[in-house]
Image 1 (cartoon, rainbow, N blue to C red):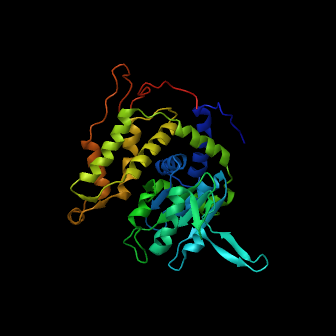
Image 2: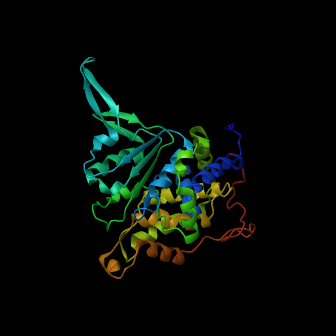
Image 3: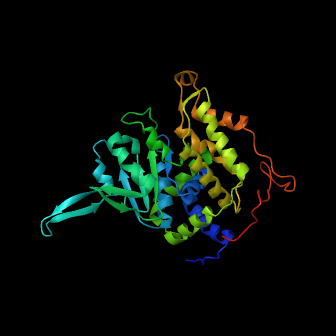
Amino acid sequence: MTTYDDRASLTDLTAVVERVRGSVEGVIEGKPEVVRLSLTVLLAEGHLLIEDVPGVGKTMLAKALARSIDCSVRRIQFTPDLLPSDITGVSIWDQQRRDFEFKPGAIFAQVVIGDEINRASPKTQSALLESMEERQVTIDGQTYELPSPFMVVATQNPVEMEGTYPLPEAQRDRFMARVSIGYPSPDAELQMLDVHGGVSPLDDLQPVAHAHEILKLIEAVRGVHVADPVRRYAVDLVAATRTHPDLRLGASPRATLHLLRAAKASAALSGREYALPDDVQALAVAVLAHRLLPTAQAQLNRRTAEQVVQEILQRTPVPAAPQQQPGFGMGRGATAYGQQPPRRL
């Protein structure tokens, strides 16, 4: 496996992402945009919520992403009888040592797959709050750091399905993005029958990147430049959700931070060392919609949070680029926005 020194360029590092992308797309056919969003969240140090009906490949996507990286992986099947200590761990009395010994729970891994997270009780769901936000676990007054990189990939069925508990607002707000896989196209489903008909492609899936390479990528994403007008654009989008008449709960400041981090990761995936408003626009629905609560009237009118975000995107002015940089714009090969010159990461 190739390693990189501290002077490695962003272009060199994104070759690692291409290997991971190809590995995951070999399992999840016909959903390149879903795979890209998953990698964006990984590089932005966020957590991913996959919500869709049963049988469309939610757990398959989570497993393919986890197995493509050579790091520790734990899977938690959320059930109504799952306890918080099953996730975080528990202190057990050791008779020989005559002292308590901490037994780590399933959360102590670099990639944690939470399958059907909304089938557990809210009490158990809340066990993830500290670990997802602060990347640590506190048990009996003792704090334990979680490994790095750390990512929670949770799947859930739609709330309307039987046996589910809606995720509380504080829990949803800790997920950087929500994605729906959707049904495959007929051609992709036909190809799936050929690929998955005999043995599962997960059986032959081998890691194509090391954890230290992912950490290198994350460090590169942190260095992506974001100009002040792009930052202001992200703030304006989030602020508009707090005053929209169809919403009784807008996005939090954490949402603004997640939107900015995701935009930087998206720019890095595109081979750029600077973020554009295009990056913010492309990720706004995935990052903001699951945090919003429509009003009762909006629900009666069948207005979804995704539709509200799309409306806000249309109404919010996009920052204009300086005239000396004519390449800046929607869908065009833009040059760097702002005063900071391109640099090696």
